[in-house]
Amino acid sequence: MVPHEDESTDARHRGGTARSSVEGCVMRLERRGRVTQFHQQDQPRKWEESVAETKSFGIFKEAVWKAWLLVRANQGAGGVDDESIASFERRLKPNLYKIWNRMSSGAYFPPPVRTVKIPKPDGRERTLGIPTVGDRVAQMVLKLHLEPLVEPCFHRDSYGYRPGKSALDAVGQARKRCWQYDWVLDLDIKGFFDNIDGSLMLRAVRKHTDCPWMLLYIERWLKAPAELPDGTRVPREKGTPQGGVATPPTILRKR
Image (cartoon, rainbow, N blue to C red; front, side, top):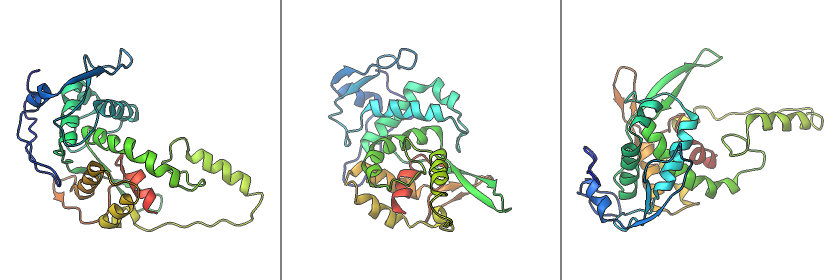
């Protein structure tokens, strides 16, 4: 295994020890396990699942690979690095390895989130946050682990960002109930995404999991700065960007 350039694990995370080895060398210390089978057109050559005895967190490569497939299917624009899905895929194996290695070592720090303003029907603007492609993969890894824990807690009439549910399902339910009720209740929480308290968010998440790496990275994502169109970076003191992969399961459980 040839060491990857510019992929240091030098970092100290809460509850762990500092990592200061070259990522390629770390890989040699791990015992090889079974080869994870995928469709031939999607499978990286000899991408092997490792026991990861030298890692702080048990995040498997298979989870990172599945997260990539979902991110690729969703497409979307590039983040602050302006890297597209196609560009990321051209160096797919080292890119996914870097994400897995840093996440499993506690050394993953999310990059700034690119902000884009889109017009609203009432003339105002909504600010969207666009993470980099790599950060979307990392967030999807979290979502794959967190969503099954919180999904059973949602009300049956909750349709937003739910797996297996859509806005069309909500419309169908509304069509049925309009024959039963002659009134509609419409409400919204003004500026919810922009003003959510990060400490309250983590407190809500802790009710569903005590997994150290999930709590660690959720906190880091909540604190990731925003980057304005002129390149200015703004520290995030509250709120969470609309547009992040991990936002729906964490935000909606707080409501």
